[in-house]
Length: 84
Length: 453
Ligand SMILES: Cc1ncc(COP(=O)(O)O)c(C=O)c1O
Image (cartoon, rainbow over all chains, first blue to last red; front, side, top):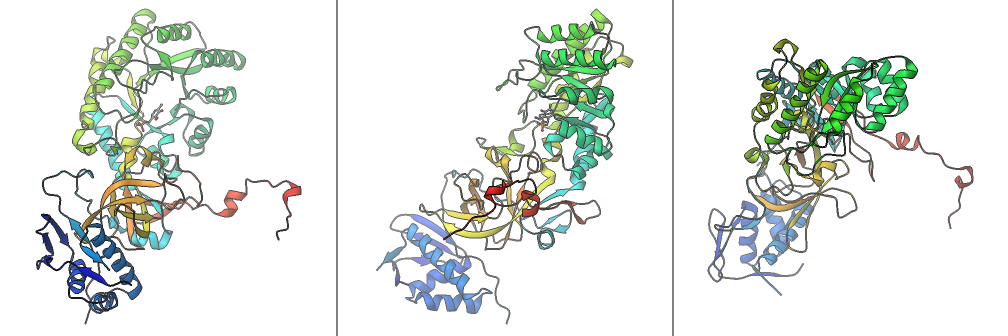
């Protein structure tokens, strides 16, 4: 797993709304999406994020990992991630 | 502490103001049960995928359609179009509701007979009747709808040979202002072919002319073509009365009424653009009041409606096999039911709903079947909630032309169940197995052994 960096001027509101001032684009996240994005922004490793999800939600590790990978590809697709 | 319910993480870009290419972004409410039988229970008992039909819905559809026509014209008879769905249990429901059988092949004819339908309640349509098939139909007094002159002459020959009379009608094709014209079937109205055929029949004392038939096409999206068709058949009926003093038993207007399915090229949902069944019935019945014979001699109106009566009573319950992301970022959901089970998905955008309560977050997706082919796409663009592997997807409006046109390809055809009025799911056709499939195969002796290295 590579280290993921989220651009620092990204802010997620409490209800999962995200606005990119640079492009004027806006997004909505579901609660798990919000949890992940916040954790990644704090600089957490993917492994830590998975632990966080499985502790709070009723899901096994391998499914959570698969979905996390998918979510990251969604973020890349929206150009919200700086890959290293 | 109980953990929270999980949903796949999602991020959705907001498209302000723009109508997106997925059409209406409303997703269908989850279908968690069919007539109060949980779809989950059906899958647990009968496997996935599985076709389920609602008996209640079928009966309601038939009763409602009968009422709509009967309130506009007093003599109405329905005939169930076997090709639309000829599962024995399904046909029997229609027969219990009083429908005759409308068949287009000897196999369908035999199926109706085995179910206990008498010949006189069978309408024998189709361009490919054989001499053997016609002989049987003559003997059993089925209503034979003659499709072309070769068939007419064959029928004359057979009635001579058997020294029996036959009850016949002719199928008439005509210009009703729509494309495609179904002029391949029957005798043409405009060029006088129909008149010629009728004259030939009237002159023959072994052919008993009892009706006129037309079927102008399927999924007809406006009412006017029906009005034109009924008007033309009424003209023929009046001429038969005036010129030959023949009183017809019936005028058969065929089927073709659309169901609530939306066509692929159609942007708006079917409900938003299609006329109501009342409007169709009005168009079909109003020309009948131009019949010139005394009212007690008015012919019965026969309706061979297929898809309109059963489409929304059929469900295909399937399970998510995998979620993938396509190279353009779109989500692909793979389910265990392919287009081989939904031939109709080549023309229709079948409605798809989650089979369990779903989160409110949705995503534009493509929905694929399990076949190893590119064409196995059920919906190219559809808004779906996040679905996990193993969760259920219910494809709706698959009651017509599904379990008659389905193909055995790569996998076996699955179970079909009926959700009865008593709210119980019962098997009406078992899933196929390897034994069933290979029972028809023959391997030549010299191919029975081989050695691989
Ligand atoms: C002669 C005839 N009658 C009735 C039908 C039923 O048509 P639909 O399902 O469009 O009502 C068909 C179907 O093509 C048909 O060929």
